[in-house]
Length: 102
Image 1 (cartoon, rainbow, N blue to C red):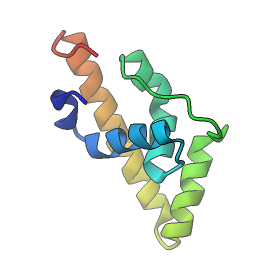
Image 2 (cartoon, one colour):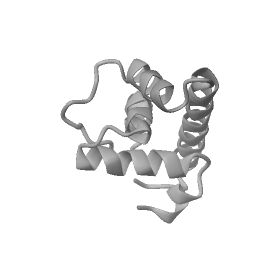
Image 3 (tube, helix red, strand yellow):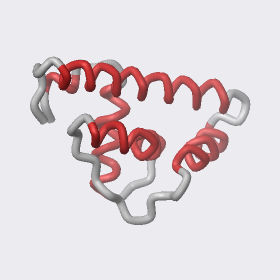
Image 4 (cartoon, rainbow, N blue to C red):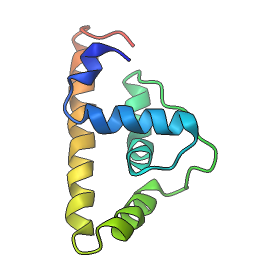
């Protein structure tokens, strides 16, 4: 993966999610990437189409987090979404300025 991508905020989650989707795994990170897939693809990032991906990854992510963190599901979910959005914005910024070719 491009070293520039690894330095973007939230890259650990997004890159892990892309790898999980490539393996066909539905991890928390994979569900997060599925949520951001349209925007990530529009910016030029290759996001695999994994079989078995839920129709509503937002709901699936929330349910997965609820099983792991029943007392603070909402805050965990919001935190992950914020990190995804930070990655998307940083990626779009680099692409728009011609500093990243994917």
